[in-house]
Length: 302
Image (cartoon, rainbow, N blue to C red; front, side, top):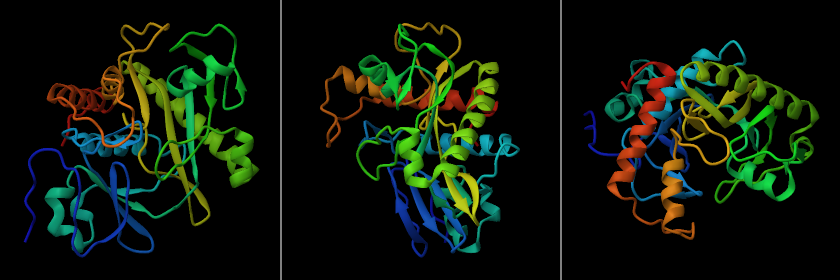
């Protein structure tokens, strides 16, 4: 019997009979075979690496549908793990869960992930801005003196980070990245990541959005480098409206920065348990996610 679609944010999936592979901050991943995974994006939201008690309505659907859009658009730059998001094409054992999975899940190839977050920054913000103020550098890359917060960099910079299963990711140098995965892979992942960022940021700019920075994840599938996980979403990127962009301070955003700003304003210590999010903060965050999808893909949620 088909499960009923639940009302309100989806905080957790349970698919009896389907092998749970891992449960991350946002995604529940199921193993269908040695070759395929099912990735389900829930409505969980993490801020400062702590998962909030409240979900953001439709957030997982935005993440999935925006990732599908980019996977299709960027296919000519590199291969990716995406197979289908059409539940009618899913294996028969998933059909009882069609209502829960529709619009927020995708079938992907099972790649071996590189243990590196591949971050590309086109603007000075977030942890990059904090590092620059302290040292004049980001991940060992010396930047010109006198830059202000949210300034556009002369060219995008590649600033890798370690992937933390829990807690904070840590920025590392390209040399440290190479020592972990090898020089050739480090160079290829850097070049591919910058290429994707340039292509995507040029497209986004024409649609009124600045991609200040973003992170990509990569894996190996049959010894071929493949783009995996989500791509260019409000969770993995910093999206700013082009209209009104003014360097010299923080910018309004289409991502969870709205939640981070609220949490900073109440001086939360950034340790569990998280404070409750007011309904207005939840509602406005949901609107920002949906607006990012509309602007970038030209589509509303399905």
